[in-house]
Each structure stands twice: as C-alpha cells, then as structure tokens.
Amino acid sequence: MRRCLVDTSVFVYALGGEHPLRKPCKQVVRSLGGGEVAGEVSADLLQELAHQRHRRTGDRAGAAAAAREAAQICPIHDVTGEDALRALGLFERHARLDARDAVFAAVAIGRGIDAILSSDRAFDGIDGLDRVDPADVQAVRALAGA
Image 1 (cartoon, rainbow, N blue to C red):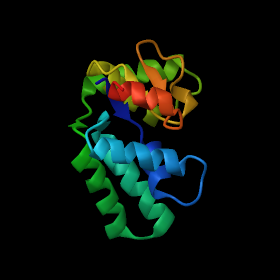
Image 2: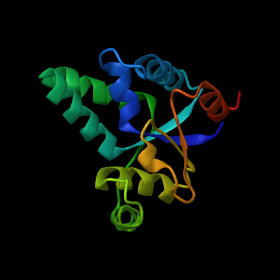
Image 3: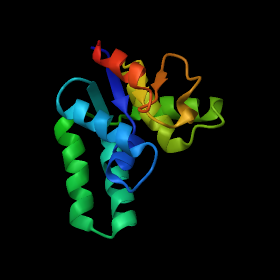
C-alpha cells in the first residue's frame, strides 16, 4: 500500500453539497476509514477543514467534529520549521501553488510521502510528489495496491 498525504479538498467535497467530486471523495474517505488507503494528514489540514466547514455551515461543533473525524482515520503530521522553509521554496518555484498548499506538499516530501490525494492541480509538477485525483478510480485503487 502506497502512503499518501490527503488534501483538505477530499474531505471538503465528501462533506459538502452536490458536486461532481462529492461521490468519489466520499468513497475515498470510506477507503481511508477502512484502511484500504494509507492516507496521512498535516496538522494544518485539521484547522483548515474546521475553518472551511464553520464558514460554510456556521456550525462550530459540527466543524470541529468533521476535523476530529479526519484525525481519527489518518495519522497526523506536525508542521515543523523545516517544513515551513521547504514550503517557502516550493511556493517560490510553483506559481499555481498557494502558500497553504505549499505547506502540505512540504510536509509530504519531508515525511517521504510521494503522493498527494487531491483534486487540486496546483500540486502537479512538484518534483518527488505525484498528485492522485480522487475521481480517478484506477489511481486511487493503485494507492491501495489493488
């Protein structure tokens, strides 16, 4: 089974309203929870997910619960100073990558994780990191080793 860092977008689409990515992301979250996919997250994902869910729903307790659920199904990596410096370099070199996503990429690279599960194409082209689109059933199965 191949390790992957899970981007916030996977949880956001799984929890959100109707969207073409909702169904595949819900399936990915089920696979994470069932241990079929070895997903890991950055501690920053938890705050970003809670922030996004609260902003969308106004439900503070529900937003915290969503972030806790992500924490229960995926190991969490702290963000270190080394990660932050690596992220700044990635941010400088990749014009489509915003600063927050640069931190996610830096955490993955720093932990020897070579795949990021995300619908966000901004992760494309980062050396040492393959983006796996949650809507690509074959690619998600490959992460699982199936």
